[in-house]
Amino acid sequence: MTHDVLVGSSASIGAALCWVVTALAIAAAGRRVGSSLVNVSRLIVAVILLAVVHRLIFGNWWPEVSNESIAWLAASGIIGLGIGDQLLFQALVDAGSRMTTLLLTLAPPLTAIIAWPVLDETLSIMAILGMTITLGGIAWVVAEQESAGGHHPHPRRGVLLGVGAGLAQAVGLILAKLGMAIPDAAGHTMDPWSATLVRIVFGVMMAFVLLLILRAKKLKGKQQTGANRKMSGGVLGLIVIGAVFGPVLGVWFSLIGIERMNTAIAATLMSLSPIFILPFASWVEKERITRRAVLGAVVSVVGVAVLAFGLAGEDLPLAAEPEVVPQPSSTSLQPGSTS
Image (tube, rainbow, N blue to C red):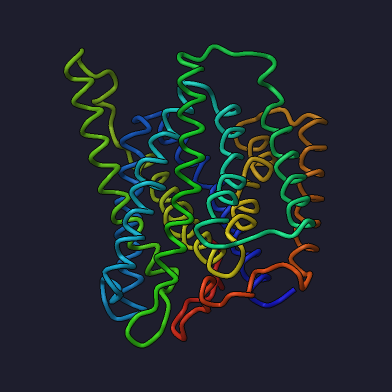
């Protein structure tokens, strides 16, 4: 396995772990003050943190890259973070977390389908097998309780929104990779941290617009309920945790992953969050972990092992076309800290 593939795989799995932390933190905060407000708040905190670190490391508040790169990354942030997160949050309400998480496993195959014509990325037979096993294990785990039913307000609408969230995530990753691949005047490609900053800035703009639209709709019909709930210190702490491990470190790791390896495989490794969350759900939310959940986790780990074996093969076209999968610039950050 090449160094780039090892770094990309580690970063993608790190992103999945970070999203477990941010999911738990944001869910706890959202129950207190509402998910839409929490979503916008965490993105604002993320912008501040990203900009400060960018200033300390690179000496400027905003990356000096081409307008074309900014355009691709802006579109990625608007679709993947702004619209995608809003669809995800509403799907959680309408259809429940199990069904929504299941639908998000559509993101890797959708990414592979889009990346084929757009990025000219193909997959070896072994890699496709590993991705299928991994997604099968994830789907088996998250679908476990769906047969038991549940009382959700708009399950059909939730399914459509969940599919939309998966598609937005896939499109966001593809657009981000296109933006990062464009070299600057010195021939350097964009650093993942800088790309994360650009994505988050435009993502928070879109999230804020959507929040205003949703608030206006609620005010038109009837007075908002729970709008006066206080933003306590505990809630602010949860939002900061959600911002650090989600839009900051999680997104940064995800961009390192897609920069260093095949986009569809990186997306598959990122989709391990439903498996990683099992022990945390048992510990934090006191959920009972069933035998099926454990077996599904084992199946997913086997799938990741098959993926790694496929990546190690010389026939996998990850680095066959350097103009499509750029090498990082000399100033590129290395994922030394967790994200």
